[in-house]
Image (cartoon, rainbow, N blue to C red):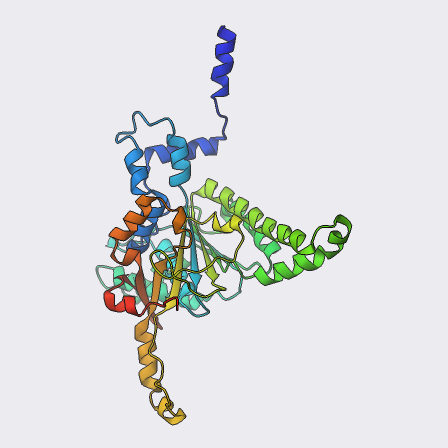
Length: 394
């Protein structure tokens, strides 16, 4: 009888690695979302999607007697986030928003007693398109530092702040999906080799991939061509075999990113570009995803980014008249800025608590930002006037 009881007890014991145990312990002791970016407009959305109000209510207030399913609850609701930032077309502001997030991550919390509000973390940037602009990031760092600082900085102070911040951004340039996967596998060893970088005293806060679809068409072509011969011998359509291999590449990448998040509790942010037109959605225009379910199910939150609408030229306008309005039109385009809103393609899978929480936010959490040669400025949630400038699905 005692032996049978002991066997029953053993079946309820779950083995886990030390890092998994420490991660669970940290989650239980500090249930706040771990993926906050220090940017209020984004953090409000992160709070909703990482730890919905209903999940917060389900937890014991003092954490002395957690409910039986508390592990499962937190494994599903709280933890490192995956955010996709999808531009509706090239030059839609996606990369500018990623620069701002990276800058806010690496800036220090304070400098010589002056609060800056940065996360004082490290960033890994996987630049799949070889378009990373360090000069642009530098201008964004300077603009945030000058705007956030409670007192003006001298040129020497500003140089010290930006230099220290840039040392904590680690840029990799994979040129294929295979290189992206292999590079991702080396990130942990690289970060633990403290003699190779200056970020040994900082946590890895954010891993950015820009853009996640860079090798999409080449991968589809490669897999379809490679598996044509196999299809003849197995009587399986070549397109299906190629698609399975194509999907596996994203599964492998997701598995590696999960391992990185399990080790560093970092937020993964991936830039993307939409391949289809806008459609009516639950809380605003939405777009059909074009990546495999292995990736889309991995994402916690998807944001759409687009330029604000600018009035078109009137009917029948001549080339000379259009040229005469060039300066005014450039000003109108600059003032229209960029719009960001939550993509509700997966809205049918959201709980009622998520939908209700979004509805409590002004314009469901949508916001705007402007970008010019001096930097980037994020603005509070969209006003009614800005809402009319947001791209529609017609």
